[in-house]
Length: 109
Image (tube, rainbow, N blue to C red; front, side, top):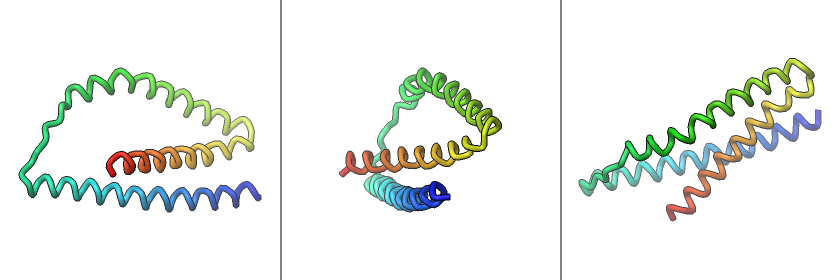
């Protein structure tokens, strides 16, 4: 039961940070887009280069995600102890997104 309450506290802290940083990032991007529109400045984005760059990496990441997800689902049926895995993975992925927001914010300042 102690693990549950630790997860609740950690999850709540991560969720608050996640939402706060997401709102800040959205406001920053909105401000940049509105400033660019007001200045009648539109930058061209090379979409084809981005698609080519991402296609090579995306396939193996998607395949890996399917394998890991299937493994987690199978483990849930094996033992009740594995029911903690999805919660830990969810908090871990949220921490990764929070870190990405912080890195992006630091890069734009």
